[in-house]
Image 1 (spheres, rainbow, N blue to C red):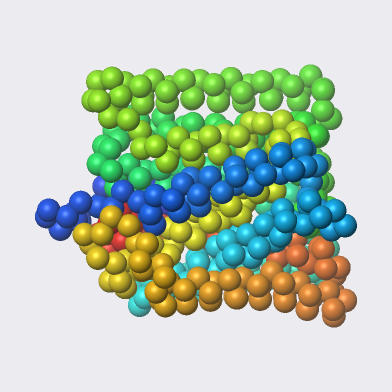
Image 2: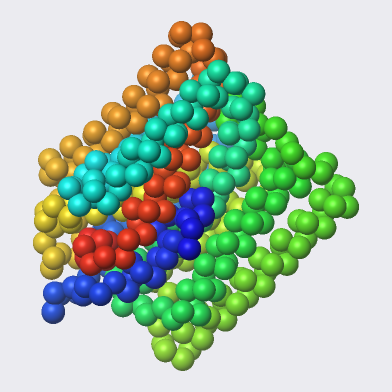
Amino acid sequence: MNPLPGDILTNDPVTIAQSTEAPPEGVKPSPWILNPVLDYLFVAGGAAWLAVLANQLLLGNDLPFDKSDPRKIGLLTVIIVSQHLFFNAHNVATYFRLWGSEPDQQAFKFYRTKLLYAAVALYVLAIFMQQLIGVLVTVYLVTTFWHWAMQTFGIALIYCEKRGYTVSKFEKASFRALMTMLSLHAGVRFFTDETFSPYTLYGAAAPFWMAPSGSMAAQAVLQVSMVLLCISAFVFFIAIARKLFVDKRLLPAPIFVMLATIAALGLTKKPMNVLLWIYIPALYHGSQYMALNLSYSLRERGLVDPNSRTITKQLRDWPAINWFGKAVLVGCAIYVILPHVVSLVNLTGYDEALGLTLAVVNFHQFATDAAIWHLGNGRMRKNLVA
């Protein structure tokens, strides 16, 4: 099956969850990726919801981008800091895998050579053909929801495996269908309702490509996508309800928070939807990916006791701090220094360079993630669900 854009952890996530290598006898997998508090905050989406709540309490639906307003400075700081700590750095976490252990370097050679060269070529081409920037920005803004939804799906299955919540083929299929239909509806809404269309990314203009809002064609397509989403949600609800009443097993609690977070991003209306798009990229998707990769890296290097239920202690040690710090610094080089260099030599404006950088870097990550989390070998399973 060919990878779909952003199908992170899951071109067949079942392969990860049902790999042949089992944990050592008598050792139960940790139920957490990091620990309970950090998982609910930075994997399930709690931090994003707290930020939205703070925004509502302090500013209502206003956006915190006015530096002259003291009430907005704190929230603006949260946005900027989380962008650098999590969202910018999460791309770098992928590169750590590509240039990581010797087996990873060999397995993913295509993605760190030919595919990377293609991404660089696309970046250079767009600089000299600047009409492409808006197109690339629009494609990124539309496909990124799919990427985030599929990451939610994959990490949810990891939680299931960690907690011994056996998922049948039908349950997996219904879960995947739900995330697919949610992504489809979010994409259709971008293109059929101009008020939801992503029109800019850091100042880089994104064109609107479909029927005007309110037209019969637009409304028909939007309604069809909603009907498909409702059907998939009903089937998934039946699947997990049957599991609860027949097998006496409830879906792991963090998954409910994750589903609420990604569903709110795809279904809410403005102005709440705008606030979610401000806080969720860094404080849900980016932080989620950083948590998973940091856990994987520490376990791969044998720095976590297999009997430990959390990795709280290891997060205070130098290997974790070093890994996280390097990811943040390289992320700053990519998203701060590179766009400034491009703009300083007058190749394009800073806003356009930043939007282009974000789009192209993430295109490369979408394809790469579908590969690096797709291999269902025992080594990967051991580090993901330990």
